[in-house]
Amino acid sequence: MKKTKIGMICLCAPTHVNLTDHAGSPLPRLDLAEKLIQALKKEEMEMFFPADVKLVYTVDGTREAVQEMLQRDVDCILLYHTAWVWPARHIQAIRECNRPVILFAEAVAQGWPTVGLSGMHGALDEIEIEHTTIYGHFHEPETIRRIVAYSRAAKAKNIFRKSRMCVLGGRAMEVPQMDIDPLQWLDKFGIDVDHLDQYMLVLEAEKINGSEIKNCYDSLKSEMKSVPDLDLTVEKAIRLYLGFKALLKESPYDFWTVKNLFELSNNYCSASFAISLLNDEGYVVGSSGDCNGALTSYLLSAISPGCSQFTSDTQMVELETNVLRMISDGIAPPSLSGDKKNKTELNKQWLGEAHAGGITVSLMGKPGPVTIARLARKKGAYVLQIAEGEAYTENRKKMAECGFTIWPQTYIKLKGNGRTFVENLRSEYIHCVYDQIVPELLDFCKITNIEPVLL
Image (tube, one colour):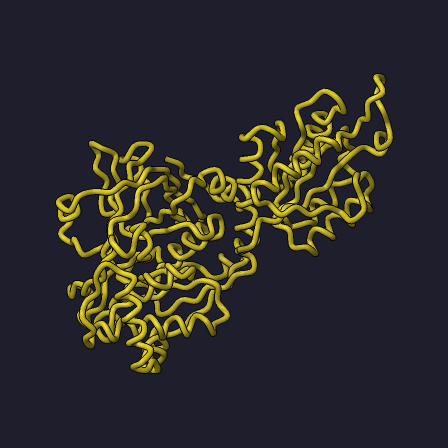
C-alpha cells in the first residue's frame, strides 16, 4: 500500500541564509524542520526533499525543487518557512506545480518564521493559488494531524487524476442522479469514464469450470458461519463472482459500477454476492449503475485504504435516538461483521428484486467509529455530505423491523441532528468507512472546490 508522498521545500530569504541574529543565533530554523520531518515519518508519510539543497531562496532554485518533486509524483508540496521569505521568488513555480500546497511555520520567536508565512499566504491569496496555511509546533498532535489530513486529501486528488472508471450497464431504477457528465469528471477530477455491457459478465461467468466453482464453494464454507447448499442458484452466483473477478483483473480500469437491477438479477443471477466479495478483496465496485456512489467509495478508499466500508440504503433515521439504520439489499463485504467465521452468513437472495435469485451476505456491521459521506450534485455543482458516528451492534428483533433479516445492516449513532442529516440526503444510498476522516474530507472539498455539507 503506497504511502502519502510529501515534497518538503525549506524556504528562506536570500539575505538570511547564513545570517545570525543580534544574539548570535542562526536565523533559518532548519533544526525545527528536521524535527517536523521525523514527526511526519512516524505518521507513515513518505518525505521527499530537493537533492543536496537545504534552503531554497532563488527563482531558479524553487523551480528546480518543484520540478524534482513532480518527477517523484508527490501528492502535495509543503513549503516550510525557516525565516523571512521573499514571496515573489517562489510564486511562479508554485503556480505551475499543479499540486496542493501547504504553507507551514513554527510558532517560535527565533528566526522570525511567522513573518515569512504570513507574507507568502497573502501573496498566494492575491493571485488565487489554492493552498492551506498551518501554524503550530512539530510536537503538537493537532498540528501533525492537520498536515496529515491535508496530505491524505491531496493524495486522493492525485489518485483521481490518474484513474478510470468503467460503467457496466446504465442507471438502475430510473434514478437520474446516478448518471454523471463524463466530461465534467475529466475536467474536475481528471477521471476518465468508459462503458461496457453487462452481458460481458455473463460471458465471463460461463467460462468458469466446475472445479473452480467447487473450490470456491468449499472455501466459502470454511470461512463463513453458514452457506446454502450448492444448487444452480448458488453455482451461478459463484460463477458471476469468479467471472467478474477475471474481468477486473484484465481490465484497464481502477473502479467500477454495475447496473445489476434488473437485467442481471432477473435473467441470470443477482450480482450482490459478486460485488460483496470483490469489495472485500480491495476492488471498488458499486452497484445500481450509481456513478456518484462509486466515486464516493473510491474517495473513501483513497483516503482510508484497507479500512472497512459499507454502502447501503439510508433505510431510516430514528429521530428520538439519532440512530441511522444502514441496510443494503444484499451487498456487504463479509468481513464487515468483524468475524466472518462466527458472524457472517450467506443466504438465498429475496426474489422480489432478483427473479433469477442469487446470494445475499447476512451480517450486522461491527462496532466502531465511522465517517459517513456521499458525493452529489446541486444545480450541476458537486457537494459532499459528511457526518460522523459510532457503529454498534443491535439485536435480532431490531433487525427484523425492516422486514429483511437476511440483508446486511449497520446501526450508527449519529453525531448531530438526524433530521438535518436526512433533509440533506440527495440519494437513497449512503457510504460509511470505519475511520475518522472528517478533516481529510473537508480538505478534499477545499482542494477540489466542492461545497461540504457537514452535519
